[in-house]
Length: 80
Image 1: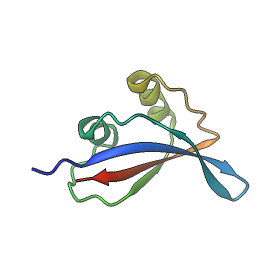
Image 2 (image 1 turned 90 degrees about the horizontal axis):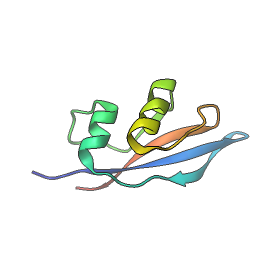
Image 3 (image 1 turned 120 degrees about the vertical axis):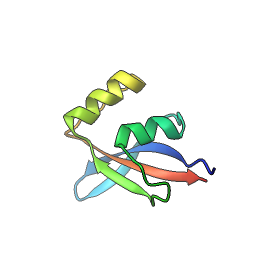
Image 4 (image 1 turned 90 degrees about the vertical axis):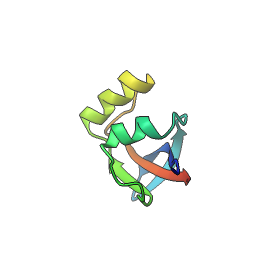
């Protein structure tokens, strides 16, 4: 079974573009799949907007505060 590892990157919106501003630690496949409720093993690069629920999960699971008015979150596939 191939393990797909995801890394979370946060992009800050500046005028009309997103600028990478935070790289978060890689805690492996399971956390990110649970985080996004992902079942598909062949997911391409995947991005989501940060919601209050996701903000709360970041705080609880990774102890990282994210300003939901400022950041957009990208989940990138690293390897398989």
